[in-house]
Amino acid sequence: MSKKLTVKRKADVYERGQVVNKEVSVVCEEPLTVFLNNAELATMICSPSAYQELTVGFLISEGLLQKPEDLVEIRLQEEMGVIWVETAEPVPQTANFLRRNIASCCGKGRAGLYFINDAQQLEAVKSAKQFKAEDLVHLISLLDKGSDIFKLTGGVHSAALGDEKGLVAMYEDIGRHNAVDKVLGHAFLNRVDTSSKCLILSGRIASEILIKGARANIPLILSRSAPTELTLKLAEELEISVVGFARGEKLTIYTNPERVIK
Image 1 (cartoon, rainbow, N blue to C red):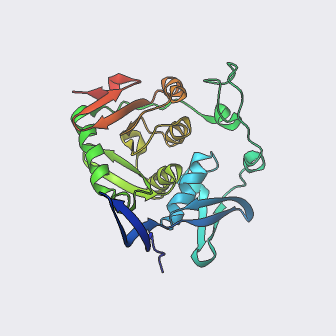
Image 2 (image 1 turned 60 degrees about the vertical axis):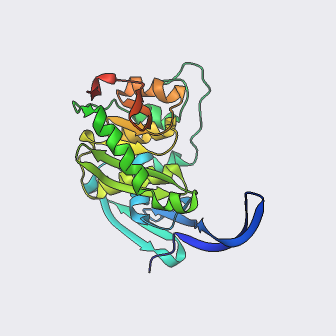
Image 3 (image 1 turned 90 degrees about the horizontal axis):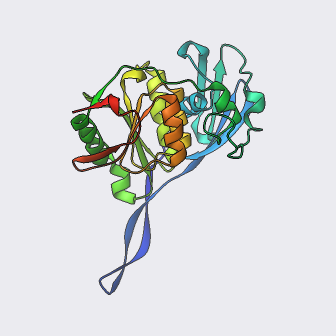
């Protein structure tokens, strides 16, 4: 039985000089503990939905899962908040997973700052896909229209995968990283060709989100919000187009503008 994504609570609401006690909607969050090949890997706090997609997307984002054929089994025990993943071969990176650290900005690595494992594993995204600006504007509007839980509670982030035909998958979650991982997990489990799609976000394009996109071989990241400087440095090296401030009929193309056409 699926868990509730929102609950009703009583709260005092102040508006125009009046205080009214009324029912409001609040988002739910639950812990999910991931076991990889019988070893406890991580516990994530997330919206209680799409656990399999979240877990697979998380493993992709961390470089622990690369190909669909590597995935042997996923078993979810929802009432306990535990999910088990078995892969065809041992995952050597697991030993270093909890010992990762961030290097200082001293010029080492690609842009001077990010996880050591990522610096060793990231490759540039090779895709000839181009996107019409009007299609990107349409996609961000579809994300806005589909963000039902955000409209109800204001307490989640949205992420989606799309192309000129529309949205392929969309998820909302209390964590922006979780929302992206759910999208990537959906694409992986359904064998979607991500090299012809764009990742669509409701929030800031941080460097960690860009790294997730690179691991999934996504050529363009689109958001209503802004990117960081490090995101743009990484995007240039990883050949990813970053498009931000997509609102109304406007958007800003920060990197690799040749992928966006009129």
